[in-house]
Image (cartoon, rainbow, N blue to C red; front, side, top):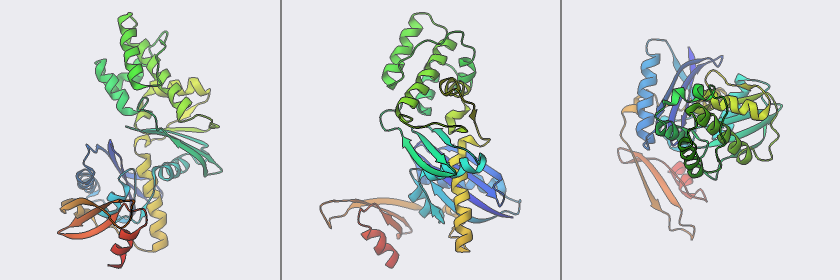
Length: 322
C-alpha cells in the first residue's frame, strides 16, 4: 500500500509517523533527541522500518518539520520541509476539520495557532521563558518524587489549589517549595501549578489572541489531564485532544508530503538505508560579506550533500549548480 512518512525533530523529541492514503496512522514513534538529531533520526528510521516490515508498505513521500527540519530533510531526502506552525495546523485541521484554535505545548516550547475557515490567520510562540513547557513539568514532577504520568491525575484530586507564581520557572519553583513548607498537600500544589502554567501560557503566548472553539490541545503536555482541566476552567470551553496528540507535527509533515509527492509524481526519499550511512556535519564562516554567516555542511563519504545557513543563498545555489 502507498504510505507517507512524516518526521518532526525538535530539541527534546524526535517523532515519526507513517500514514496511508486515507491519513490513518499505520506507525508512530516518539523518542528523545538527546541533543543528537542525526543519531536520533537514524535510530528512528530503524525502528519505524521494523514496525512496518512485512506489511507491504511503500513510502511514496516524506516530509520533515521541527527545529532540525532542514538537516533531517537532507538526510532522508524529504519531498517537503515545513515549519512547525504549518505542520501542526495541517494535522489539527485534518483531525478536527472545524478547529479554530490550536494550543500546542511541547518539551521546550509552546505555541498557539488561530485558524479561520481552515486557514492560519495568526500564531505565536513562547519567547520569554520555559515555564509551562514539558521540560519544566518533568523537572517539577521529579522534584516532588511523583511520576510525570501521575501528575495530572493528582491535580484532579485537589480540594483547593494553592496560588503559584507561574510567570517564571524560578519563581514558580521557589513558590512551590514555600507552599510545601506551609504544609499544603501535593494535589493542591500540583493543581495550583497547573493553573499557574495555563495562566502564564494565556498571558504570554495567548496574549491578545481571540480563542474560539473548537479548541484542540496537542503536544506531549496534552497527556496531562491536570493541564487540560486548567485550560477548560480558564477558557470556559471543552478542550479536544486528538488521538495522536503527541506526534501531530509528524502527522502534519506526512500529510504535506502526501500532497507534494502527488504533485511531483515521484519522491526523493532515500530509503530506510539512510539509517546505516555515516553522515558528518561541519560548518564554516563565510567571508564573502560583513554578515559572516555560519554555513552548515552535511556530507557522506566526503561528498557534500547540502549546505545552508547563509542569508543570501549563495552556498545553497552553488550546491544546486555544482
